[in-house]
Length: 208
Image (cartoon, rainbow, N blue to C red; front, side, top):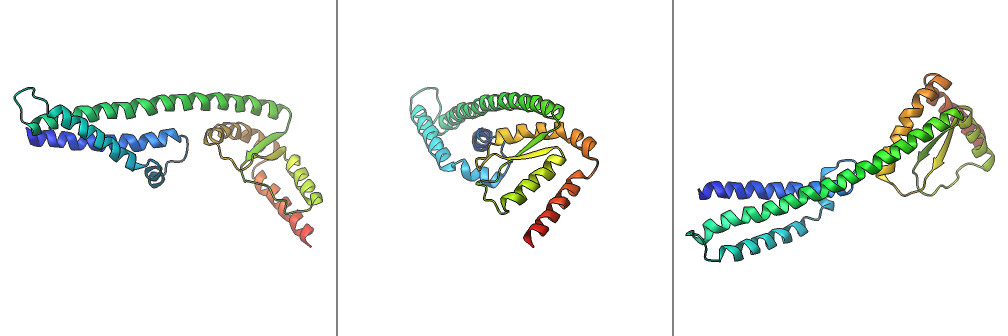
């Protein structure tokens, strides 16, 4: 019986560790899944403190005189119960956070879809990107001509700064997916390559 209880305790401990690490991912969702980074950011030293606390509580309860069991038998029964409560907490907490994030993503996606419809009607699509502080590498005249080339293809690029918002980035994909068929119909296939060639050619001329 004790051997089975030991296995139950070990499995439960592993489940708590997994739930704790997964909770760290949910808090940062919808960031890209990167296990080494998530493990590092989850701060496992705090989990060690939690296990020390659950072990202490289990020890104190096991020290009480109830049932005709020895201390080890009582501890092996109480420890998984306490850790089971911790596991339940780690499951419920990220679940609420995940649902909240999903609602926010859905709301932003709907806003971007409405904006995409409006931009398509106006024949001018705005694509956002993140690149930090913009430092102009071309003279104003060249920059203006590059903007003109992009507008010829029905596009305006907008730098949103250096702050990365994973939720907004995910929602922006809806916008990009919505305008992609319009841009291909408007400009033809491989329009991105043609536009980039025009821009590269302009830069070569400007550098001379």
